[in-house]
Length: 147
Image 1 (cartoon, helix red, strand yellow):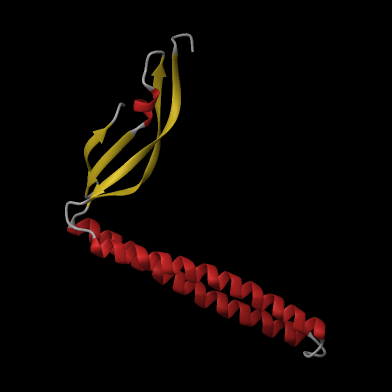
Image 2 (cartoon, one colour; image 1 turned 45 degrees about the vertical axis):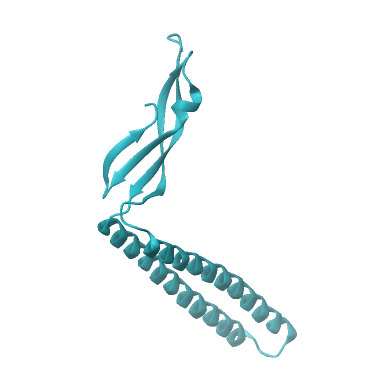
């Protein structure tokens, strides 16, 4: 740091212009996410049932209270994970509905990136930290803020 400069990490906001291609891509990603969540739910149910069947099969007396407790515990764990996945799916469906209402040429926040920048005495730190990139169909159209 002999030269009076310092390298810092910062977050860059990525904004996208809504275009037909952007909407198609967003819809496809969200549809794939819904399908993935459905597959996870199906797998969860199958594995939970297999585990319950195995617990009962290994027991001399399936009506034994300890066996019933084990089964109830598995059912509770499966239920909690199912609720989590169903909430995740509901959020994805909400996002899908929001994407459908977006108008062409509208600018939306798409995500964030991280980068490093050099700062030195006299720099405006707030300005250096507030950087955004505007993209249209993946191509950068504008960079707002200090590089």
